[in-house]
Amino acid sequence: MVYLGVDLGGTGIKVGLVTEKGEILAKGSTPTLRERPYQAIIEDIANLCKRVVRDAKMDMADVGAIGVGVPGICDPNTGIIPFCTNLGWHKVPFVEEMHKHIDKPVIVDNDATVAGFAESIAGVSAGSSSSVFLTLGTGVGGAIIINGKPYSGAHGVGSELGHMIIRVDGDPCNCGNAGCFERYASATAIIRMAKEVLPAYPNSRILTRVGGDQSRINAKTVIDCAKEGDPAALAAFGQYVKGLATGIVNIIHTLDPEVIALGGGVSMAGDFLLDAVRREIPKMVMYKTMPFARIELAQLGADAGIIGAALLGKQ
Ligand SMILES: [Zn+2]
Image (cartoon, rainbow, N blue to C red):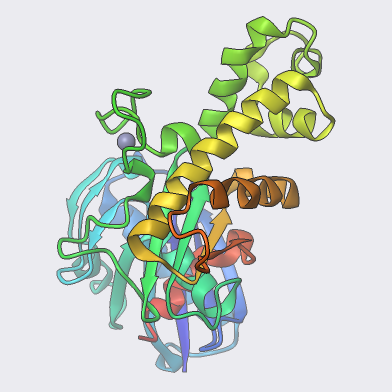
């Protein structure tokens, strides 16, 4: 049996035909064109699914189920997507709409949850029964895997790890609260931290790199300059690592998972980030002599979304 995995994003839709072990047999993509009615977008998803199955020279009868990762919150029990800010969706009956085009079981879940699930089966957390996955991008997405299954809580709104509040009255967050983890651990955070320290370092390499135009600073600029030893970049990076490690320690104290995997744009910093975070965490864990979660870099990259979505269907 094979499974279809759909990675539904704000700009693109990716579909893959995936084996039970998480290997991709064929894949395809199409633009989301998100200003369209949801019915048109879902019809495109269904057509892309059919095309990918044909490209793999297989038949819909070989497909066990279709899993879909959505950038919002999902109700896996009803198949309704209550909120998807990225697509402007509100109470979209996703599964019902898919069934107008394809007669297969359809399972929906949050995109970060799906990517973390993929890592727990075919990536860096494979073989562990409990793991947490963090995507360090524009915001911070989270996934919790317990006993080999994604955990989203009693009402489907759990695992919002990016919105754990780690500082009372801290930096304002898009969610309406302040001091959320993602304000200290996202790519957006590292850019803000660099801009905050720059006035004290007028000769910083960061400024040379962007031709003096601070609006061109991205996370990679700051990390590259930190790797090269630039004092301003190191000051911002040090703050960033402290924020990231603080959230991770909260996760360790709450869940004590076997593995915490870091993915998303900032994780491209590789061992430079991993080594710094690994140095910071032991300072804050409570039981100093006890073992705690391995902190690792995610392995599956951009394909995690389709692999994890497909494997949702296998459960
Ligand atoms: Zn928030």
